[in-house]
Image 1 (cartoon, rainbow, N blue to C red):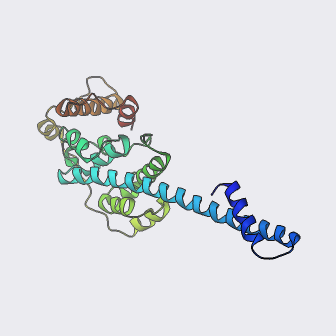
Image 2: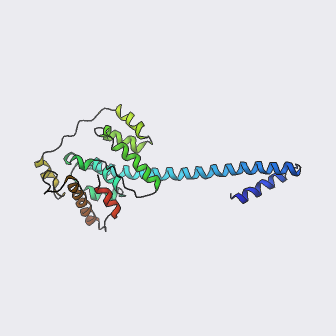
Image 3: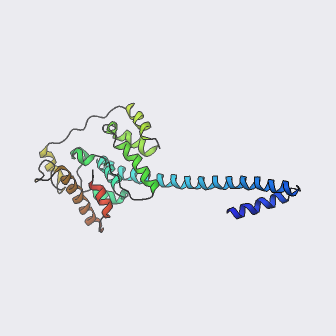
Length: 236
C-alpha cells in the first residue's frame, strides 16, 4: 500500500473502535505505524528474493559452463570463460572446442582472472565475484572439483569456503606438458607460450584468448563478444 492508502486504512480501523476522538487519533497513529512497518518489511523481503534469484541464476550459468568444460577435460578453462564473459553453456561449448585440454594448457590459461566481467545485474556481479574469489584462491588450485562444489552449490563466503578446502585432500599435482606435447595438441590455438615471437606473457595470453573467441564466433555465426566482455576475458 501507498502511504496515503495506509493512512486511510488506519483511520477507518480507528473510527470503528468506538473510542473518543483523542483516543481514535492515537489508535490511528498506532495502526498507521504498524501497517507502514509491515509494508516496509514486505518490500524488503521482495527485494531480497529478487537479489537471491539473480544470484542463483548467475551461479547456475557458471555451473553450466564449467560442467560443459568438465565433460571435455577443460573445467578450469571453462571457469575462466564463465567468470570473464556472459556466455552460457551453449556459447561456451563453441569457444572451448578451440582450446586444448586443461592438462595441456599453461598455468596462465587456467588462472581465474582477478578482474571479473562486469556484465549483468549488481547481484549477478556480486555472486560472480564470490565464486571467482573461491575458485581463484590458492587453496583451490589442487582441489578444483571441491572448490567448484563449495562455490556453486552453497552460498559460503570466501573464508568459510577456504576453511572447508583446507579440510579436503589435495588432488595429484597437475603435470605441465612439454613444449613438444603442447605443439602437438594445440592445433590452431594461437601462439605457443614457449615461443611467443617476441610478445610478452600478457600479450601471448591476450592473443590466445582472442583467437579462441574469434574461431568460436565464426563457428556459431556470432558477431562477436561485446568489447567489454572481450577485454575482461583477455585480462588475467
